[in-house]
Image (cartoon, rainbow, N blue to C red; front, side):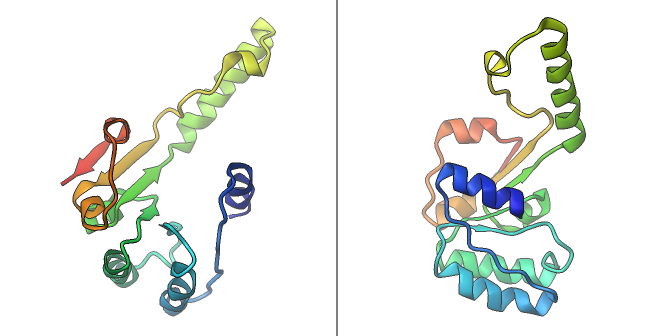
Length: 149
């Protein structure tokens, strides 16, 4: 969460977070946060990530036309709009390869540029996006590993 807060600051986003210790606190926390946000990001945490909470979250996000983002294909199949599932092992190997190339070739990091992370899975539920009024451009759909209608 701290890394996400730093990234949000860099990109000019405002991140509203709530720490919860019990699954039952999720709904109250969502209600508090949902009035302040343009999208909701649910962390892949066993306290939060229960079938009851995800069913409830889907209904709330549809009623509020609120995009919900997570890290699991399952939540997109359940009806939430987007999941991004990073493959940490592939990203680590990619970072090691970049470091090796910089050392071996004495390249400057800025000369390499930004690379797409290898192995990252992106899942989009197009029918949910339509229901909440979210327009998806073709480039977003083209990047997706799986688009569910």
